Image (cartoon, rainbow over all chains, first blue to last red; front, side):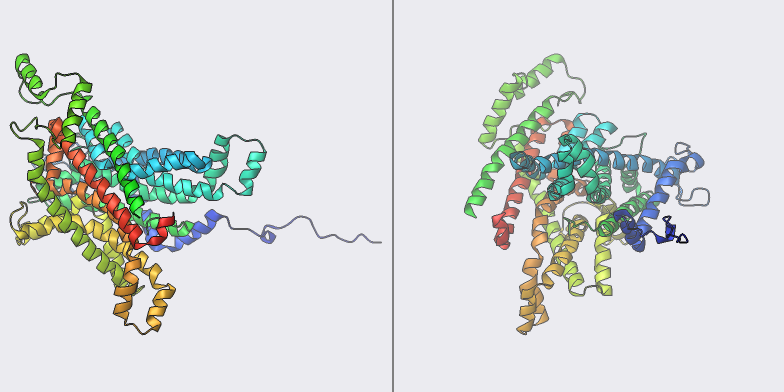
Amino acid sequence: MSPTTLPSAVVTPEQIETGNSLWYDAWSRLRKNRLAVGGGATLLVLALLCAFGPFFAQSYQDQNLDLGAAGPSAAHWLGTDTLGRDLFSRILFGGRISIMVGLVATFVALAIGVTYGAVAGFFGGKIDAVMMRIVDIMYALPFTIFVILLMVFFGRNIFLLFFAIGAVEWLTMARIVRGQIISIKKMEYIEAARALGLGNRRIIFRHMIPNILGPIIVYTTLTIPAVMLLEAFLSFLGLGVQPPMSSWGVLIKDGAEKMEEFWWLLVFPGGVFSLTLFSLNFLGDGLRDALDVRSSKD
Amino acid sequence: MLRFTFRRLLQIIPVLWIIITATFFMIRFVPGGPFTAEKAVTPEILRNLEAHYGLNKPLHQQYFDYMGSLMRGDLGPSFKYPNRTVNEIIGDKLPTSLELGFISLAVALTIGITLGTLAAVKRNSWLDYVCSSTAMIGICVPTFVLGPLLVLTFAIRFQWLNASGWYGPSDRILPCLTLGCVYAAYIARLTRGGMLEVLNQDYIRTARAKGASEARVVFKHALRGGLLPVVSFLGPGIAGILTGSFVIETIFQIPGLGREFVNSAFNRDYTLVLGTVILYASLIVILNLVVDVVQIWLNPKLKFE
């Protein structure tokens, strides 16, 4: 008998059925959403400009007192402020602080909210009831007032600012995470992890949280604008970032004081700030649709 | 319903107690007192001042004294405005802030519900896109950018309105529009979402089948259910309008309580800060309760949760 040639066991790449992962699906959905892509691209450009722009632009400290406040020109694209400092550079430098506050404070909120929500959802029962009751009560508190008090009394320290804002914005995150944890708590793979004898902490952080990353990412994207808004609000009242540092809130405050003569000092920082919030919101909404997260907002 | 209201009312007491106590002690542990900012006073005068306001007593004694007078509705004397009590100052400034807040809320509800309903009824038409993107702009342009921009346009450029002050009715336009716009935007989004959900339900089809006019279907049948998300947003919304007025009152130089609160915090006017915080906290907590009760009244399904 002549040896029959068996079909080769080697499979060519084309023959493999490639399953699309959740993330791949989400990415292809997101790519079709023009507003979200536009928002993401705008953010990327803004972030790169703020991160590296100052190395090339004129220093924000360079003063040209002869020039004073001058309108937009070829040398100074967005004009100069009353001390003759280039407004474009100031916006880039301010952006560094604003973006940093946005990211760090959001991270604080994220860490508190995810841990709190996960613990409440995981243990359930009385612990859950008490923990969520506390969140309900805290929702009703006028936190902005407390942040204002904190900033006034304990010096306007930027680290305190991170912490204060983060400590305010974690509540919704905790609620969302708790709901998600409850919904996956009874799944087989969690049962399996338990059967393997894993500890609670390991189950929560290694097995549960990675599975609810979708909603967490979406809500994080939507928390950043809220945080940046709060920072700018405080800076506008003179309670946030202090000179010589500046943030977009500080620039807007300066601009609003001098807008009667020098409109560009208000319009450009305000415009850049609004553009950032726009982009973040569009990106967040796009991610929410792409990852198909039921929103609590609308 | 009554039991629910009662239980929530009972909850308010510990919440307010925590707020008052926390604020009281937070203020006292802060470096710098109410009399250190001014030009240096002699130690003797300082002692007399402190004795006059009871600041030389032990801290817990001060706390009990304060809680005692608070029970009688007395918020104490102001440290910065001699001869004026906190009650007087609040009585003086609060009406202005309330007026600003209520007009702004009315503006927000009117604009928001109108835009949101239009967008939902004419779903996916150009009208929907215009309404929805207007709402997005409203959310992304913060009050402290919008306010100065409106002043720049209508007060400085066209000179139709005053840039600041709070005298005639026309002085209400810019501040209330600024404060109301952001919330109008949120309300528009929520109304649109709520209406879209309701418009697909069976009872709306029934109403249409009965031959009710489109206007009747929308206003009589759909709006009540469609506005539920708006009602639940009113709690945080009102809190936001109250605190948002700090910025508005600063921009438009309105003599309201918000500006007074920020100033009193800078001046370390202990009693005035405490009094304002207590007032704002009670307002917010009570309004939240009202919102919760109204919500259950509108949507009996929630009662069982």
